[in-house]
Length: 119
Image (tube, rainbow, N blue to C red; front, side, top):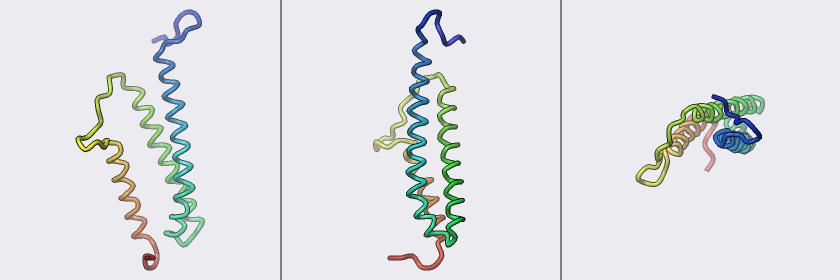
């Protein structure tokens, strides 16, 4: 498929993809930096070794990039219309999965924490 028409005008779908990519990549980088900055404090408390905490934090950031940018590329490959992802309670499937995954990671890191839990 030739995305460019003869002349100076591009197909509208190309512009939509460019905007989608720009917004998706920008949001992914912004959220990854925020999670990395704030999550490092928690990881340093969980792991006694600061170097280990930074290494785990970097691995989590790389995983976050791979997961989100992988989803962006898969979403661009499917051309059918997107139906509603809303549940009856108003939440979305993505919110439910992200919340459950975050809760599992927090519970695992809480079990790895050395010593008693501060009140």
